Amino acid sequence: MKYFFLAYAIIAALFIGLMPMRGGKSPDAPIRLFPDMDEQDKLKPQKPDAFFSDGQGARQPVHGTQALGFNAEGASVIGGIPEPEFGGGTGYYATGGIDGYYANGMPEELGLTAENVGAFLKRGEEVFNVNCAICHGKSADGLGMTSHYGVPGIANLTQDTYGQAAYPDGRLFSVISDGKGNMGAYKHNVNLRDRWAIIAYIRALQFARKAPYDLVKDAYDKATASAAAAPAAH
Ligand code: HEC
Image (cartoon, rainbow, N blue to C red; front, side, top):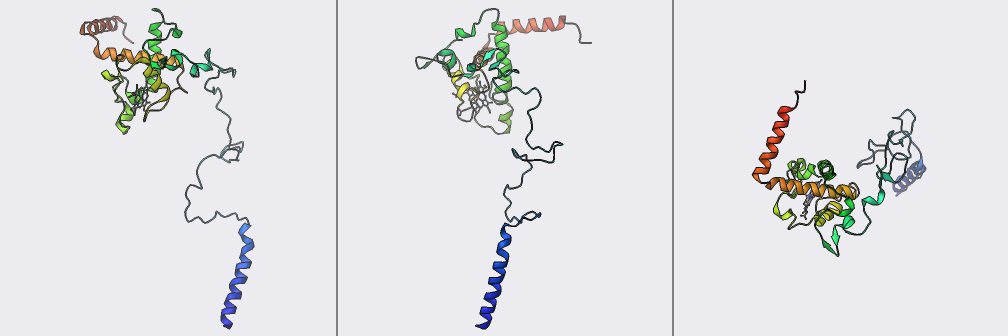
């Protein structure tokens, strides 16, 4: 019994003696049995960081950075396009629907004419290649780069099921804007006009798949003739 009390007293003394050290500061790293993700090579907001010469972890935006929807002066425009161009409006141009149904055709807000439609399609090609080709492929056949790395079920947009008769322009607009299944929404990145340009370009790609032989041959002959006529590069 004597020894029990002795042991008890020693343990109690140790325990009480060590307790105050719990809140003590130590320069040593704590012992972590399960480190999880406590320590990461990253900058924490509002924290100092010795990596940079000014000792600040928080960095200024890179010189010339332009926030989406703002021009260099901070006004709410992109190259003259007002911010609502990304959505929020009503009507066919902003929703792809008329009276609750998807409709076909290019909205008149685009102001398309015989003169500017070429540039519009060219813009569509550019925006499609930036935003869509990575998955759907440059020819919209669904075999883009990500399909080789395991993204499943990417739609082949050259199929008849996505043709204008079965799949109206407005429905394309809606999928680009809000996404579907594994495909994300593009309404925050691609403004309304560019979305319609993508739709026009997809229609052109679909048409190119089925273009009559004479038309293709004609275009091919013209292209090869002008390539032959062009002066050599050096
Ligand atoms: C990250 C890969 C990815 C990107 C980028 C992408 N898509 Fe998709 N898209 C998919 C996948 C996956 C599906 C199939 C979605 C489903 O049916 O679940 C799909 C489906 C579609 C469909 C058919 C939807 C339906 O009703 O079956 C259309 C149209 C489409 N995409 C257009 C586009 C356009 C236009 C762009 C560019 C603005 C784009 N996609 C960008 C992956 C992508």
